[in-house]
Length: 205
Image (tube, rainbow, N blue to C red):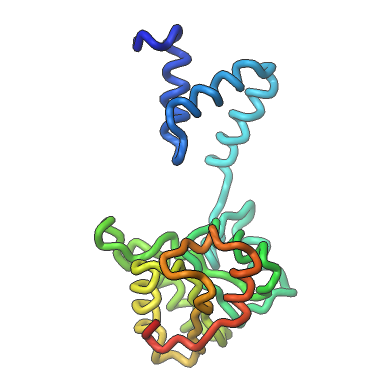
């Protein structure tokens, strides 16, 4: 046991919390000690919520967003414009766009962007399922709303080449989002304007 820890159980708990993104060992220690101060029922509810999430959460069969059901609430909502699909990198980006209240279409979650340096290729993402959705018809516009990074632009171009000969409008969010920015960190007004003021995508930025 590390001499700095009075308990092996404490050390193990801190070790697990410190595996979370953005959580160092000092923050992990504060979180663990906070939980220790709570009553047993509160801690059990906390732990059970995470276990239940992992065991029972689903991914929408249509757009790959997180869902409680086979088809997510957005895809199954008849009030949404099913002819417009907004392509995003991850689930956090869906939440960011939804927070703008400027978009009434549906989504397609890729699960990442093409990044050879990280070993992520097109086959690792939900690109073919997007191509299949467009091929099935009923989609008039695909909005490429990926982060304005080199990886995001590479992914935009790859999708463009896959869809350019299909009868669908391809657009990209306006560059109100600064180059290099991650979509989820953009403020709601800027992101909302970028969606509304989207432009035709021609394979270049």
